[in-house]
Image (tube, rainbow, N blue to C red; front, top):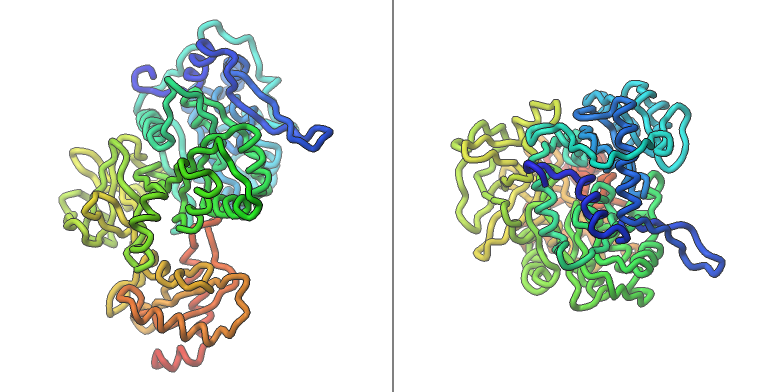
Length: 564
């Protein structure tokens, strides 16, 4: 790290000098005659050579320091080469997740005014067909295929300089933009400056337990945004067997993931709860063990007790399963081990105490303040909440995004100025227990505010989820005559064959017995709860509430009970 700036291309180059034959990237490459998977392996010497050869070509076509460059590249060797070359020249990368939908991509790109575009052929086709930014063909690059008018990596290769120059960027210059999922409102362009980007890797290394001096780590980035993590520690990145333009977390092939994990001796990965649930269940059902797989990190939504238990069965008793908590703006903030959750906190979660997300990482500070629904213009306007009492969660640390790109309104809503260091509003309710652990009880904006009190999503839902016939529940808020009605929406287990009306009465009676759910008087059965497109795990409650309101409008019993 030079002048506090972390440049991953330089990190890879230094690793290639010390360990030229170390494997940097492993990529699935079809099957051999006997049905076994084949793999391509790329050394650090080869990766660094390709990166430094492509970087001069980027400068020739006008991609250099500060150029706003859209990146739509799922993990692959070519994605590694181009991604690192962009860092070598100091480009300002804008990471877009196509899973959010074509129209949403168009809206986001129009706002951030990109100057260059890099991606797989399908992404460039989308750019052309849906108007994703201007038709900047002179600054378009395709990887893993061909696209008319776009540069390929081969066409950009030049003679690599003997001593590559560091990009002319400062700590205050923009490094990258990551978009929030948009599951709680319009997706926001989260800006990371170089000073935050550098610190981000330090916190991630804490989470992954990397020890670059003594161990070559093998990591599989199931979540595409994290595909540089292994390389940042001089480790090996294994490309997942996932077709990202086509597959979703819910349709990912668990068998293929397990094959690659075992073939390549993968030691760690980050994935969404849905992928982890499917993979662990498949492994348990087929008695598959992953002896080298030592650390799993999940995020994006809560990981349930049963999933953590299945993962430990698959990986072995000495493995580590952690849930990370944070936000796109604060990646990550806290972590919680499966062993501690299973033995201490899940029983309390099932009683409505919220979800324990563990303790903050080094350098991360958490505070609980009185819930405020409006903008907070100064930390002096906040009121600290005592230990164990519910409030709004705010966080600060050097790795946290300072603002949103070209979105001053969102910055005002989600940041709290403080002379000693700005705070970020995570948007969740919660509290800190006597052991210093953070508990989350649901989104501030998604609590059901009734005239008799608030009902919180992650308190109410986990009580209902304890019923053996409930696969998952979602709390919705339905407005009615100046009040809000809490409605619990139930997705049943696939094996359910009984009478729904009897089950409805049973669940409502169950809700009446707990202080966190006794205001719930209305229950709906839903075939499938709406979830976010990125992780397929987080309930999209605005959609759920609209659905519940429409269902209840035709419910005579509801109208009668409500006095309509």
